Length: 247
Ligand SMILES: Nc1ncnc2c1ncn2[C@@H]1O[C@H](COP(=O)(O)OP(=O)(O)OP(=O)(O)O)[C@@H](O)[C@H]1O
Ligand SMILES: [Mg+2]
Image (tube, rainbow, N blue to C red):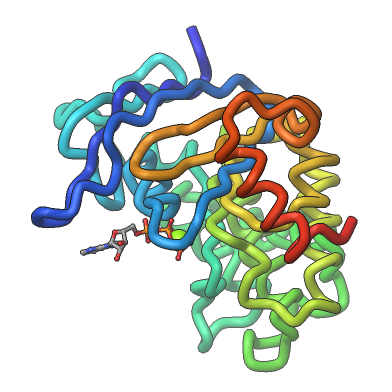
């Protein structure tokens, strides 16, 4: 049994067929990076996995349960899937600490003190011990995104889905967020949509290249960068590495 299994997932918006049969699996602690041009359906795929936007056809299994089955308790399953958004999605009227602890109270039913303790530990883990009482407006983009990561981690997910977690950040702040993600690799499974090729090359167990609604090619970074099987993979990686190739 795989930890996550995505089986032949299809998704259309009206006449626009975005996902035309996506299949892949993930195991505990694995890191996979999804790449592809704008509009290929990378975000759509993440939303199909956590059922924010369920697929039209196909199945998604997590930890032995079929998430796509309408009878599955989706709120329970969602606790196993963390999500880190490009635009942070923090509550602006709450401190960093409260942004992390609130889910623990409301979703996990922890008492306030325990939730705060746990939130404190996760914020410390992402390097924000000194900023816990600050509001999002008082944090840099990179710090906000690290709050987003701490919030996801606090729920003890099996997997965290990241949708371009650094693309809204100033270049000098990207490294801090990538360092946090790098440190997490192996302890929680991560499925990351990103253009950061240094991260893909050094941290990913596998890179998935999507285009035209399908997975064109996937494989370990070394294979994808050095011995791509498809000419299109080579062309795309060449282009993207020139733009985002910094280690
Ligand atoms: N809710 C929606 N309704 C209609 N069309 C949508 C919707 N969401 C996405 N699309 C369209 O589906 C296609 C895939 O969008 P998606 O956001 O998944 O792409 P993406 O690969 O994440 O792109 P990007 O790299 O720009 O984030 C795009 O053509 C987009 O315009
Ligand atoms: Mg997207």
